Length: 122
Image (tube, rainbow, N blue to C red):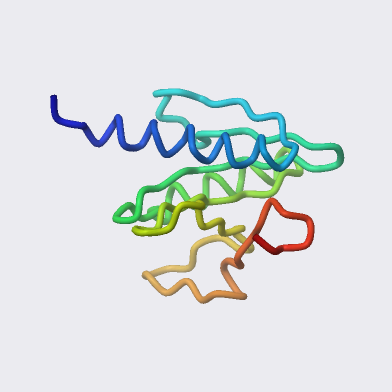
């Protein structure tokens, strides 16, 4: 049986969930819902709204901005978890600003790397 894109995405969401649980988060997965958020991660004093994307997947401007808007509404960190080929751990990006017009999204202006490890080391 062939593995579908849905299955690959769901497997990655579960891997991100497991990684965050390992770092002390309580995580709720919004399975198959097609909502703005795939995972909600909660730790004392911290709320994350997470969109998971496979390596080839990009977060379109509309989705990026909806995730930021929802995060502002509930004072959460908007995070994108990306699967990088050949790397076991997810690559996390915190969205710092709304997506600008066009495709240019500079690191440090629009996003920055984020880590569930309090020391930022893995």
